Structure formats: structure tokens, C-alpha cells
Image 1 (cartoon, rainbow over the protein chains, first blue to last red):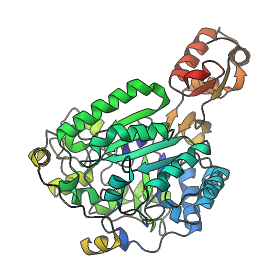
Image 2 (image 1 turned 135 degrees about the vertical axis):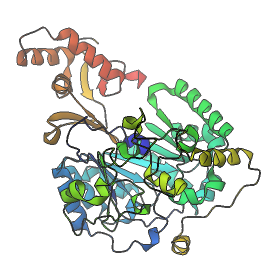
Image 3 (image 1 turned 90 degrees about the horizontal axis):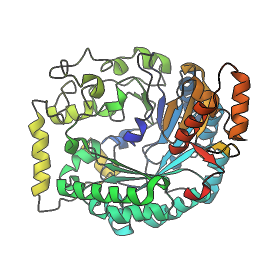
Image 4 (image 1 turned 180 degrees about the vertical axis):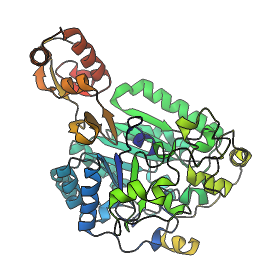
Length: 377
Length: 93
């Protein structure tokens, strides 16, 4: 998801507008993916925003110029008011994107969402078949997903087919792309795992060898040549392996505004894991949160940056990288992202990648369950 | 691109005026392109009319110069990017 989002680009030097509003409407989910980007403590989120509160968030964000709405979770289909939220978004002029596992979808709901004005659906798959899919996501959902992908196309939606890639499915990329092709995907996003949240916890089990990535990329390129524009395939690299700090959120507080199920506003997807207090849309207006809150200003611009970033010629393209990665790898959210070779702690990333190359035993997965969430947080 | 070809925006593409940005923007799954003035004028007319019809209309709105070559270049580029659906080359998807 991250890569496609970054195509929402703000005009240089303009007053920042939260062009991209991400509504994480619930953290409840029928899946238990071991790479989930939700906070480890997701089970502790209670008191989801009510329908009216979400509608007010949409009103406020649209008035500030927000134009893309991502509705995600957890599994957003678990919200019974999803159609109401989508309908309101359409009336306001949002382009609405539903990010779903497909579980909980059916023909009736698809029809209702279409009538409400939903613009696009991104459906996640975990693998090319049920065995490896169940292994990483828990439960038996593969055939439902297949059916729902067909239904999405039957309802004439543009469909993004999203797969998080890791040690256990990279070697299956050819059959994954075949599946996407057979299901009529318009875009395929092969998103290599970023090691935050649950994925960080499962690094030993999920990190692939460099050879796996190289082969998967070559196979992807072969598919691109074969299918051309009819199915656009994005192979999104993982920071650990690309050894390049990425411009997190396109620059902090420039483009992205996320709202967690309980109303906490987030400057990045992982902000709940950072040592900053998140303002709540229940207590403050969105505009005040965006413009004045500590959370949205703490990493805005470049004044906060340490060396080697401060004097680096890449500063304006990477903004110092990912704050969550800095916290996880350097123990300091203000540090240079250690995935950057210029970071004094880069060796820590190299060591992880080399260890993954040499790893012989497969590690068990810690699944994203309520029980695990409670015991880890 | 021939003059009698009809053009629409591709499915999933939406064009709208954004007051906050003082510009037309093209919206598509999880993305947005902010359009400059001429691009907005051209794309807002891609509603099923022919290339000739579109050029005639633009020429009437902006009579000072011959726009034909520029408009066709832009439309061909937009078509390559997948923004347009046309009655030409339906078979290449």
C-alpha cells in the first residue's frame, strides 16, 4: 500500500494539505496475518468511533482539501456502517478506496457499496493457494477471497491485488501472478514486508534470502513483458534489502493523515508505536490537529534532524527515512533510519539480512491474535 | 489519433476541480495527479466526444492559436498512460 500512496504528491512549497486520509475504521479482523502493520497492542483499542464521528472526520478533512480516502483496518467490512461512510465520502467528493481481505464481502454488499459510490477495491491475498495462505493468515479464507475477487470484477471495479511478500511466499511469485491474471486484476502490488509491528516481531520467520528477492524480481519482470499495460505490476522493495531510506509518508505532516479506530490521529501508519502523544479527533478539530499538534509537527520539516542527515544531499528526497524503523533499530525515533548506509548503525540491518541468507531452520510465526496482542502489550 | 475517434476517461479515473489546490486533479486508485491548466481543459472535455469535436470546442474557448498539434500530442500521451478509453484500438485493452 505504501508505494501506491506515495503517488499522491503535494505541490512543492504549498501549504501542506492532508490529501490522503486513511480511516482505520476497526482493528477487528478475521485474519491473523503474522506481518500485520496494525499496532501490537491492537486488542487494547476499544470504543471505536461511532458513525457520526466518522462522518464528521470526513467533513472536516474534505474541507481541508483531503481528496483520497482509504478505508482500512483491521477488516473494514466488519463495520456495519461502511456503506454509510462510503456514501458520505462520495457526496463530499472523496475518491474512496476500500482496503479489504475480501472476507465478509458478498454480492449484496458489493452492490450496496457500488450504489453508495465506492470507487475502488484493493483486495489482499497471501499466496496462490489455500495451504500457504492459511499458514500465514490463519483460518481458511482462500476460496472466499477468490470468489470475492471475481465478484469485484463482475461489478466492474478497478481491482488492486495486493500481496505482502516474505520468506514463505516469494518463491511462489509466478503462480501468484498467474492467479492475479486469472482473476482479472488491473494492478498488482507485490509489497515486500516492511519490518514494523507484527512483522518486526516475526523477522526471523519472514525475512527472505537476497537470492529469493532477486529471483522473484526477475520473474515479475518477465510477467511485465508478457502482459504489458493490461495488468500493471508493482514490486515494492523492502527497506532492509534496498538499503535506502524511504521518504516516509512523503514527508511528515505533508500529505498523510490517519485516524485510528478510537479516533487517535496519526501522522504515519505506525505512529501509535512512537513515543509521542497522539491527539484525538474526539477532543480536537482536525485542522488544529493537523496544523498545531505536537504529533504532526515533531518531525515536520528538517530542523529536528541529526547528522548525518542534516548535511546529506539526499535529505530532501528521503527526509531521514522511517521514524518507526529508527525507533526499532536504533532505539531512538529521532535517529537516522538505520537502513541508510550512512547511518552509524547500518551494520545492524546488514547483520539481519546476512542472518536471513544463512538461516537453515524455519522459525514459527507469532500470529496476530487477540491473545498474542494482549500478552505482548 | 484520428479525428473521428471518441474519447472518455478510463474506468476508475475521475476528474474534478479542487478549490483547495486551485486545479483540476485526476483521481485514480490510491493516487492523484494535479493537472496544469491546459491538461485540465482537455481532460474535462473527454466525455465521449470525438477528437475533432474536442479540438473545435477548445479552439472556440481559446481562439488565439492553433491548438490541434498540442492537443493531439497530449491525448496520445494521456492514452499511453492509460488515462483514456477510446473507440480506437479497443483490442489492446
